[in-house]
Length: 327
Image (cartoon, rainbow, N blue to C red; front, side, top):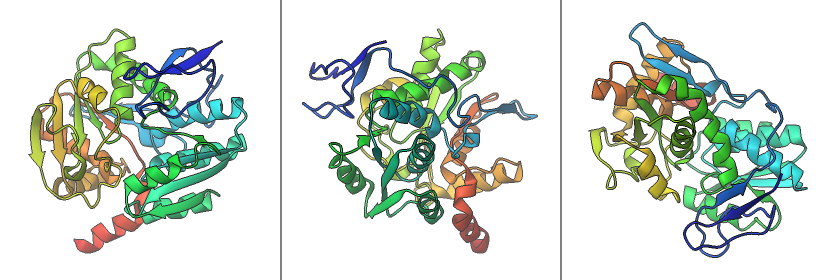
C-alpha cells in the first residue's frame, strides 16, 4: 500500500506517504494518488446511518446519528487514523463546531491530543461540550481567523484541514456510496458550506455509476455558489441560527460548482427556524442548518426528495430555549 499527494492546480507533487494539509507551493486543495491506510472497521461506529422515508415519500439520511453527532465523523475517522499511522501525537483543526467535536472524540479514543480553533459564532453548547471532551479550545472572532491560527500549527500537529485535505474528503465519499441505491430517482438536498459534504456525496455517487441530481443549500451569509450556479430560490436573509453554514470562500469552490448539478437554494433563519421545529415535532432532532434542506425541497415542490440531515440538535439546547422563549 503506497500513496502520495499532488496539487492539480500548480502541479506540485509530494513524496511517498508524506502528509500535507494543502499544497505547500500554492495553498490549493490536494488530491490523492494511490491507496491510503483506512480503518479496518468503524472506529466509533461511524457510517451506515439510517435512511428513513415518511408517508409523503420524503427520504431522510440521518447523518446526525453518527457517534459525535454529525457527518464529519466519516472524514475524521479516515484523517485521524492516518495521523496515528504516521506517528503524530496531536491534531489541530479549525471548525464552527461539528468538525471540532468529531476531532475531539476520535482523538480521545486514538490517544491523540486535540486542539481546536473555533469562531465566536459557534454554539455555546458545542464549545462547552468540546471542553468537556478534553479538547483544548481557542476562540476567535471569525472563522477566517480560526483557520489562520490552525495553519500556524501544522509543523507541530496533524492539521485535519477538512476543507482541503483529500484524506478527509475520502471518508465523506462513503456517504455518497451509501446513497447510490436511492439516488437514481431522487433529488438529493445537501447543506453546503466548506464543500466537503457536497463534493463527497457527488464523488461517492459517481464512483458507483450514478448521475447525481444534487441541490446545494446555503445560508445568506455564506452563499458562495450564488454567482456560480443557478439560484433556484432565495428564502430569507438572516443567518444567526445557521452557524454550520458560515464558510464564505471555500477552497474547493470549482468542485462545488460541478457537484451542485441542479443549482443552489439560499435559506435564511426566517424559514429554517420553522422547518427546524417541524423536524423536531416529527422526531428528527437536528441542528438548524440541517433544517434548510426541508425548506429547499418544499420550495421546489420535489415529490420524492432525499434530505441529508447533517448534525444533531442535542448540541443546540441553548438555542432551542431561545427559540421557544421567542415564541
